[in-house]
Length: 81
Image 1 (tube, rainbow, N blue to C red):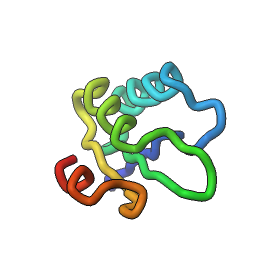
Image 2 (tube, rainbow, N blue to C red; image 1 turned 60 degrees about the vertical axis):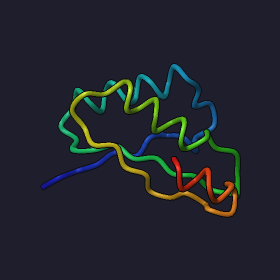
Image 3 (cartoon, rainbow, N blue to C red; image 1 turned 60 degrees about the horizontal axis):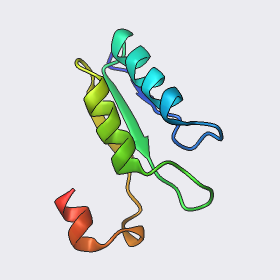
């Protein structure tokens, strides 16, 4: 069975140190991948930046985006990312 973990990008108090700590712990654990998404109902970390930080911090796990809210981003920039 493959199990993924979602980063706490939507949790209040999630800062740079907490995000990087989560990434390192997920990579050291038994998870297959880590994911992040964004929402419009409350403040979240920028999903592209969170996924880039996860990619830079991990070596083993796959990086997955769960949700990009397309209308929040310029179309060409979102396609490029």
